[in-house]
Image (tube, rainbow, N blue to C red):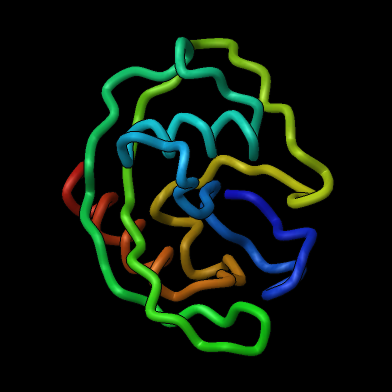
Length: 123
């Protein structure tokens, strides 16, 4: 999880991610790009990319509510990777488990729901 250093939802926790760019040819490519931008993880440090699901979720952008398609992925990371935050977007990083979910101030409820589903399916 990352703590947002920007609005909307400044100071709340979020999953690393963002919007698909016009230059991304696949959704997986955007996942790798966002991981690199937000936490400094290179695509070569990622394995077992697994699609978890997609949901439509409202998102406020420049005072306009948009219906945003959120796609969620899980992956495995190589041992001993270094997390390098983009401080302009995120102020903190933390690893979490299923037991941590009730204590996290989530920016988006859909993140909590997808993590609950992921942890239940992994158990």
